[in-house]
Length: 266
Image (cartoon, rainbow, N blue to C red; front, side, top):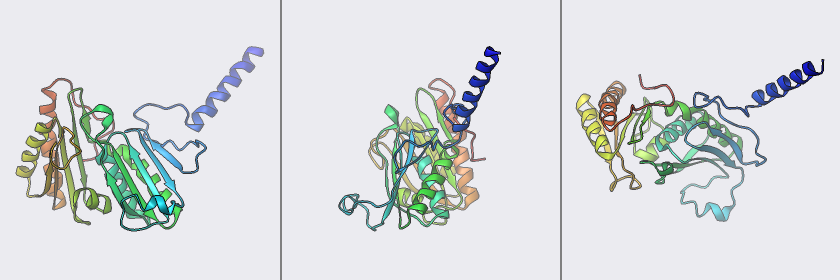
């Protein structure tokens, strides 16, 4: 009888732990971790990219003057990550479409925890902290999806992004006209990115917005990054064509390029 009570107690405790989300199911778990950490500014974390979301309800005016933003806001939302600039930008691009917020700053530090690419710091502004918190929460939920077309090996990585209708974040970060389709093709080492860029623009009738390389348009990261716009079907076709070639090229350096989440560009 005593042994039965002990087992019942263990099952009860384990059930509570699982319900509260303390036990993670690994990279397949796409849920945002919003467990309380005892800090009012904390909103949650995404399960990839070391991505954390926070919000400051009333930013100190003296601090705000030094944030290098043009328009003042009462509340500021923060999406900050160690790796993955593109996924966080695309996730935030979606988030601001459905909330009364505005992207006010995007910075891409040379980071990726020692890898070839960038981390990210994205700030949004709003006059109501509830709007800001909602936008950050929405972005955190979208981050795993945007990692669906990032492929990694020990030698490097490939990144592909696409949206049929770009918004504020894509406009600020990459100069994409709002409302137009946008595609990103990125490869590391940078030479792979250059070849993929050539494949992309030959595959469909798209407009090249820019091409970034280690000394031009990146934080000295070892990446070649193409930004394109145009008709949505053409942009998607260009990105997918580049992806096919990029996977083969990166594979030649050893290892199979793998993504942590299912591809969303299909």
